[in-house]
Amino acid sequence: MALPHKENTFTDTLKPSDELKPGHYLRAKDLAKRLGLSVNTIWRLSKQDKFPKPIKLSEKVTVWKSSDVLSWLASKEAA
Image (tube, rainbow, N blue to C red; front, top):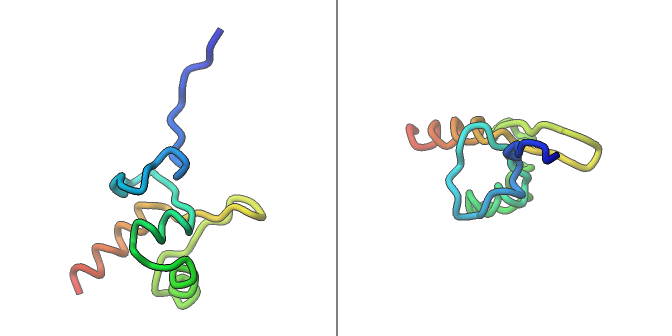
């Protein structure tokens, strides 16, 4: 008996050309590609409180909520 398919909202299911949508979680590398920033810049801005804070899922997995990133982008467009 097959289990029902549950959509994975992590970036492994997203293509770089996909739009950012609320409810997704993005790794630094994927986020950098989508925003045109380097991974180092994302980490630096986050540490300086100029970018949304990441969520640490495990020792080696850190993600950002796309809704937080979308809000950050909207604030940059409004400025």
